[in-house]
Image (cartoon, rainbow, N blue to C red; front, side, top):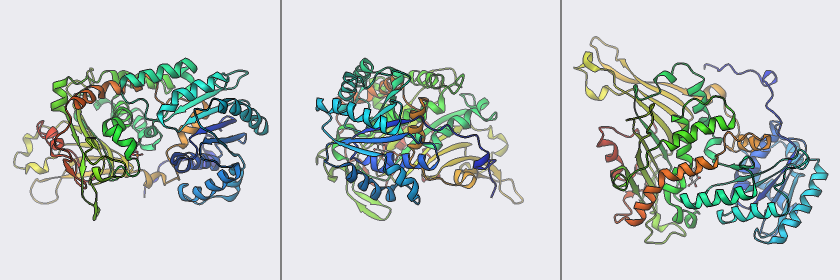
Length: 512
Ligand code: BG6
């Protein structure tokens, strides 16, 4: 197997160890802490990227002592770390875990927090550097930051830093996202606010930038002259699991499009930034998001598709429809699938449609970006069966397969000229091996060294909401009448196929 030119660890330039600091997790008894945050911190400790001067303070309303919190996480880490646990590193980490039982809207919490942090800061020599991770229901975001500011915890003095990481959902429409930005910016500077989108923690998503800008051969053809269209699919086989009450209020459009899918679109379509400095990259992302043409009400009707899954068979098992999921009303009209055709109105992309789709309970789990190139003039191959004249497709496989493939035509061996479609295939694991990762390591580390490149700026969040706003408005005014309209285990409603077929195109399915 070919190997990438990767230097042995001892010869690689060292990644910077994070600054001394305390991470405060609001909502520490929840799923995110045990599944992602703590395993990610542990993986950072193993890679020696966490400072020796470090502590975690979890806050939640479930009553727990420090010891109970430590024991609980010691049990759970085995399940979620993705590899064997080194007992020495875990023990080092475990001793740095603390817990506070409190209600987030209790004003007394914040003065108590200030005192507790001052003590932990002394004990662990963390130099007054704190970051607050808001893994709470979104209605607490604004008030938590306001309360932190009221007791001076957002104030950066004597060389210390204070940062806040906000999880999604960031608003539920454009107006609420703007209001939340304004509220946060009253109590913290934009530089202190890290709006997280976990898609940017994925190696394959970060690789879009490396692929485009570190290779001379692709950028010259990365435009309307050579590209026919782009497809972005985020297909999931899972249903809504235990998140019915959140999901039924949100729906697939809000849950996936203004955030994760906009990241994929902007990285694929942005202009080269002048540097990899945070604002240089985010300026270009914001610029291209602003260039996405807002759909008119008529266009919402012809260029968007919504769907809801009914019962069906998935991977050989019968699964219930969305309306039979826990905490979902039996007559719910919430969409679990969305497809859209968007246009980017700039010189690079004019007339190149961007088709996107995402849905739950689809036939296969697969996130991929397909760049389909224009056909070669096939005058020389008139007698070849049309199905063999497949277009060139470059596919960025984001997950679960991680890699890049290029589909092109080759001569089928034999006495006559026949063409077949073949694939050149790069798989991450073949070249770089696999490393235990939750996808949060890079993001947490970046926050601890003050690099906001992979976090969303206020204008990017708002631009994402601008794209989906017309669909939200029209869909609200015209509730769907045909839900459920796709069986679990299918590729979504028929109209999603028609959206492309009308333009003489097809979705790339079946994980290929
Ligand atoms: C979350 C959504 O943000 O992303 C979920 O709320 C979705 O509904 C998830 O399942 C997908 O993330 P990933 O990393 O599994 O692709």
